Length: 359
Image (cartoon, rainbow, N blue to C red; front, top):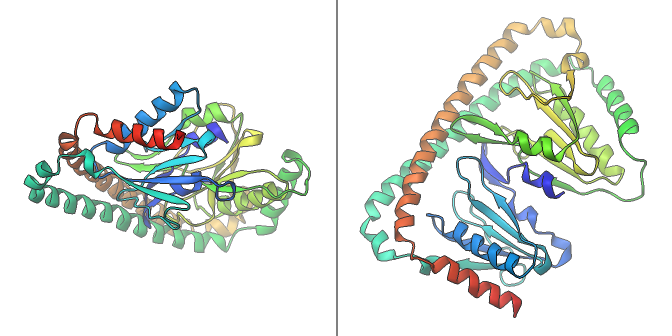
């Protein structure tokens, strides 16, 4: 799924707080190992992974970097397939802990790569910045949870008018037309985020999607009821027919059903669009979710649905503003830590790890 993975986000803020899918880069059944970098702030992890990538490429070996969300363009992971090794940034707010220390994961601290005396001198400033940053991240999640409540209310009302058998028939026809017949093999599922919360709103790596997928289906769904049901049915059909899929849930329900579905082997991208987050792709097949509702019954609730949509839009706007404030505070913390980073120390640590891996 090479290029398909890189048009998604591995971590972002959600209604459930900061959620990361970094561990999914490590195949559990193939004796892969993970290096969890405890690096603090200031770019030490990025410098470490950049040097490791250079060393691997100079040796003629594959190295696959994964990038953070826009506005934070740093490596958050590096995969070395020939060594069956993944290096993952494991610091807050996306902290990762080892489940099988030494066997499945190794902890690597970059604490020695900094002048900690300088950081101690600025402890109070850092403490204030860190506290303010955490409060802004919490505000993002609170506004998103409030928006989720509006979405649930909208789904409850619209769900009563949904023609579920019609969606099931459509999904069955779609699968029969687009998917290969069952092979006796069950496909695998990975989870990613197709969008990420930033200070400018929800961002989508459109250019990456257009490069990775040749066919796009866009479902215009203002209520958010039809799309998860349809994509979840197609997910089941695809996996049952032996296809690997990438499920991308809504950021308001990051552990829920897919809001978008990617089938990389077919070059197929199924996305949900609405007025809050319009998605335009040249040559895409566009559908209106209203085809799956009893329209007269849906019209009876138009005032309540309009109120929910407007309230959701306002709450999400507040969440984006809080994320913008959090990004500013994070940048200030990183600036102080970057000043304390010892020149070349992270690169030396990467070289030591490389020698150990090659030995």
